[in-house]
Structure formats: structure tokens, C-alpha cells
Image (tube, rainbow, N blue to C red; front, side):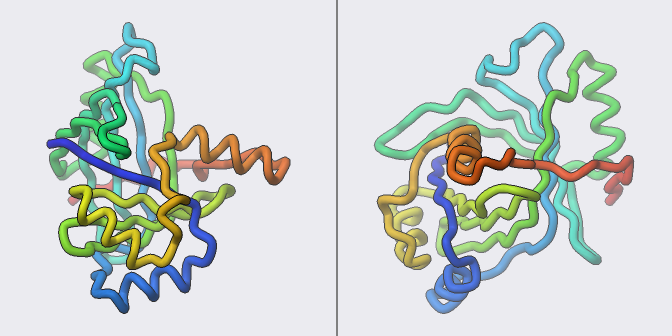
Length: 191
């Protein structure tokens, strides 16, 4: 499945979420999202392909997914990549399978999110432990544009920049190091 996306810094999350809701957006999930990235031992991390184990956690609700992510490229002003995702019932066992198959964990990111659907687009407000709040919008181009319009954030603020660029901007502007994860405990998600 091809994924198209844009990202922006969020200036006022309360206002932007309210605008999305007033325009008809539906909250799909609010809670913590944890991404753990894996690479094959012989593959450099910048090879463009990655495996991600993503967990969604909130009181009374949670699930895990395994995603293969292909290399990113720019397509008509959007970041595009192929992704294949499937839900998994036992995230801890999945991680053990990956590690025993020669994959090594190399990064993880934790953030609190509010994830909305808006037509065929999704909007995900993401608050990291210490960094700017970001908004990621995914979907077909015309639906991305409608979702962006609904937020009231100027279109010119949305980019295809990778997370590393947003980190650099935050650190340059504030003089503080960004923090993208909290300490992860061996708590597991079994569904």
C-alpha cells in the first residue's frame, strides 16, 4: 500500500483539534504510541527499508502492528513510501521472533497522540517527551489538502521533511536536546 504524508509543527493543539472536530473529523484513538524499529544485522539503517513494531496503548484499549516500510521518495509534493502492515496479537513474542531471526532493535520513539479520521485522510497530533508537537496528515492528495484546510494551519507550514529535520529545528531554536522516548519497561501488550 502506498502512503502519502505531510507534517507540520502545531502551534495550538486545542484550537487545531477543535477545528478538525467541528469540520467533521472523528477521534479514532487517543493514548500512547510506541514505535520500535528493527534492522537486519547486515543492513545499514540508512538502507531505506525498515521494520517497525508499533503499539497503541490507552486505558482499556490497545493493539500492536508490524509494518515493513520501503524507501521514502517525493511524489508531487508529498512524501511517499510503500508500507505493508498487519496487526499482531502478542507484541512481546513478535519482538523475540524478530531478534531471533537476526533483526536488531536500533531505535524507538514514544509519543502521546490524538488520531483522527477525516474523510479518506488521517490526522495524527503527536506530542513527544521533549520536542515540538507535530501533526502528520496521510491519505490521497485531495483528502490531505481538505484535512489541512480543516486544521487552519497554513498549507505552507506542511512539509515532506523527515523527523530528523524537525528535531534539528527544535534543537537549534531552543538550545535543548529533543527527547523522543521515555524509558521503556518490559511491559508487553498481549491481545
